[in-house]
Image (tube, rainbow, N blue to C red; front, top):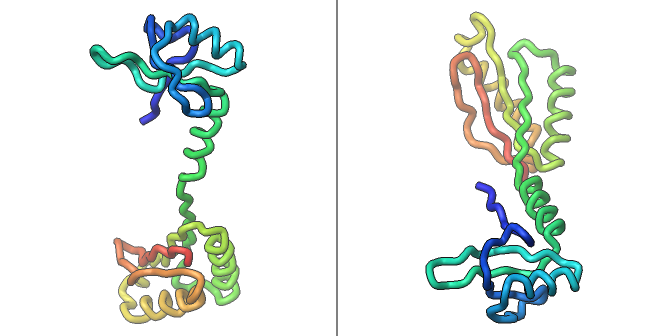
Length: 164
């Protein structure tokens, strides 16, 4: 949920509680005087808390462009990235090495990796050989990632690798 602020001329209150840029409370002040102070300092008057009943709205003098930039930057940094690597049971050793190299690259960048062994046709009935193949492939990531037991869903055996 994004919070929208009313700024400068969008504020409809007649009187507001003004908070200065350094956090000091200026007190109850007419909106026109607050707008003059903001303009004089080259800042924006931002309503951070609307009026509630008999209480006045709280407005702060800040650079609104910087506030928007920080909020957008915060959203971008908290986005979690997950990559997925798929391979088949009959993959050649070299091809598996190439895929594992890519997984190690993702783990070094602190991405979560979904590691999927796809089974085709009769391969899904191989039982222990499937789990041995997955275990041997996962052993290459000791020290780089943590994982739980691989889970079987349909014709795939998958595990989530979390970087250390």
